Amino acid sequence: NAGVTQTPKFQVLKTGQSMTLQCAQDMNHEYMSWYRQDPGMGLRLIHYSVGAGITDQGEVPNGYNVSRSTTEDFPLRLLSAAPSQTSVYFCASSLVLARSGGGELFFGEGSRLTVL
Amino acid sequence: TQLLEQSPQFLSIQEGENLTVYCNSSSVFSSLQWYRQEPGEGPVLLVTVVTGGEVKKLKRLTFQFGDARKDSSLHITAAQPGDTGLYLCAGGGADGLTFGKGTHLIIQP
Image (tube, rainbow over all chains, first blue to last red; front, side):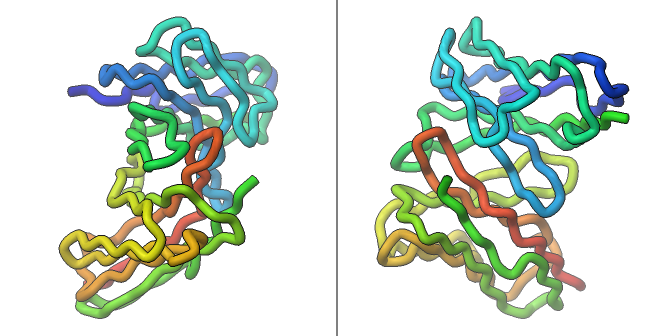
């Protein structure tokens, strides 16, 4: 099983450019999410989705857009990249929203983004 | 926002020693998970604890959930170099998981 697949693994952008980080999972998970990981800040939730057609904001949504047209895919769009968006981005999925009972989050390998 | 504080932030010990890392919050969590992350990879789940006072063992790793479900600890017995990594605790919430900042653990041979 591929699990959660993220592309690209590395990307360098100039300030103001746009790009999309791709995320796909093959486990038929309803819940998908995007986190960013920064030194000293831990993992912070950007956006999440509890099913196709449903998305919601997490802790740090500004500057990012998402959509969920299928169960498998959950792309993250940066409309106008800023240096503050330099980070490692992780896509994660789980069978259920980890509201209670602790649904296991399956993470991709991460996408390292540098904005100059 | 529910906050999870992990301590220590960094820990470097010799192979064979024991260690404990902590995850504390002022909020009550319905569940708490521990993940381990290696460089260049995503976090991987180690354990989930749900019941206050619960203790779970995974080989040399012992996880405990506080009675009030506000804190948790991870104890490693006879640490090995393969235990090196970033250990993250995460609490279940309305939007998903809230993560602590992690404990960077280095086990020196």
